[in-house]
Image 1 (tube, helix red, strand yellow):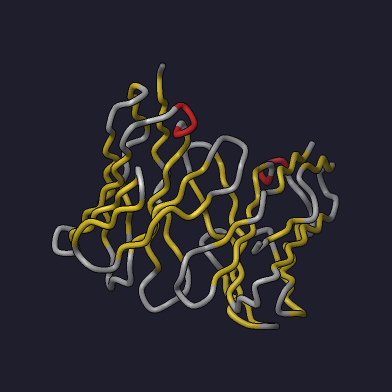
Image 2 (cartoon, chains in turn cyan, yellow; image 1 turned 90 degrees about the horizontal axis):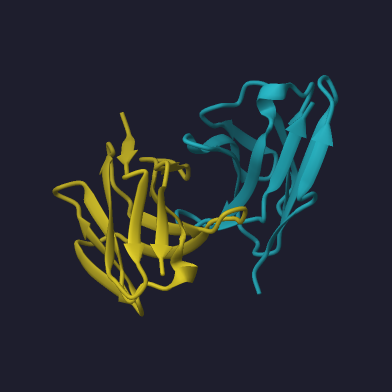
Length: 111
Length: 110
């Protein structure tokens, strides 16, 4: 069974903390994505990567960075968490322009 | 620019048929995807249309008209478990990025 695994389902952090969200896929997909999902706003793309060490900004990259050192792993980093980054974070992967496979999501609360 | 529109909410009765519409504007076209998302869960892939016409998959069908920039998802013999959000998405022209609609929340009533 193909899988995208996110490291944490629920996190609670304090304002100013550094936050790492990890995502691993086992499908040898070249493309990986980080989205955030907020009520009424839908899925918004933060960053995506189409190859190891390659990354491109999505629609809302401010306050985030990413790392892709290995093909199967794509990490999202919040350098200094803020309350407006409280959200559901979804990682996804794909091959070419085929369908996205999503992880279960990481619900982050920043206090 | 690129844009996707879907109704925010729909309600239907168990056993009925419901049609969820999606209109899109893109500078190029490389197919349209439908995803289902239950509350608190990740989206899962339902269907993909790249040519005009109807694609049927059991109780779910998806239709595409490229000339009209229009798609719909048709759900037949509705079940309570079909209560979910349904997301329409298109790949961003020339990239592997995907643009999502805000989703249609479907409530199935007994």
